Length: 493
Image (cartoon, rainbow, N blue to C red; front, side):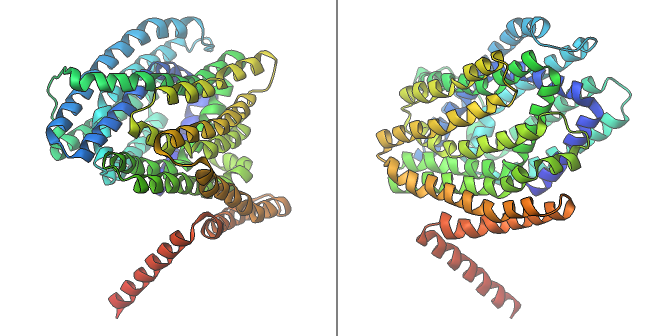
């Protein structure tokens, strides 16, 4: 992950420099149009993950294989449906509504078609990736991610030396890399998991429950798409591709620092579903609580230095920083900090299979993000106003989710608020004091940046231990360290 972070930051800088702000913004917004149609796949993805993990928890191999084959069949149909939508409605939107600079429409078309191809491959790939996660084989993700970032370094090199339209070349190379990565994951599944051998299956016993589940997830996925890509398109319509470039930069920074938190919750989700399938409610409750806390603390450790030193970090990273990139970065990181609690809560509800009312209430609440942004922009507000609205709505959505956790799993809202939310707020406030003091009173430059980063990590670690952990969790960590020390002493002796 550390290697991936370093390479991602370097490649993003070179790509922005090589493409320029205008083409970088075009790639972000045109790819976003295709992503709008893939929300159908997102809903099915959560259903696939849930049903595969549940069947794995029950131990029935025959049902597991039939569930997998049914999932692949459904995803093939979804890929065809997305292709039809993208080549009709999406293509019309690209040609008639997006603000593309004169002379770059042909390149935008290339980006669009390659994005469609990449999306179709990603859709059919979902059951295979869900199988890897269900089996908790997270090591393969580490190996493939190292290969992925090395290939991205190759993209950067070819982009710099290539004598071709840079935007088109970049789109072609990204498509090739994503295709290769999908092939590797598929080969791994076929060699390691018996259930991943696909045969055509259309059995109502397996198809209908997955479609019913995904039908309600569809609404939630549509809301997430509207909240993300919808706002990106609004920015394009009201402010142009330069603001899209700033948004893309902010999202890349957020993606890099969120990788620890994301990978932690990804490895935790199968355990939550398996605990529910095995009727281990106390184990499930423990995973929900610790998952929420620890994902926040992992994200916070890297977020505080970026929040304080956004300007200098972006300047050192990019040299020529797009307007609004700094403020977008700060707001997106704050949004991610509020949103990181939701992953384990959502997975817990999905484990029960009772998601209809959950999706209606939570999705309906989150849907307000888009009209808030639209109204703000219509009234002449600045581009960042959309993110402020998204943060407020995200905080409200946490408590809506907690209501369903109480309803379906009998977990008290007060217990979660006290054990998770309150400890998170306390750790955040206390961890910020010393780094903010250095930020305010030290002279701008390298020394301040290094000092703030070092003190932020130390401060977050200390207050996580003192305020974020329960007594039992502290004892377990202390015993873990003692056992490691004893083993090391015996080894050297």
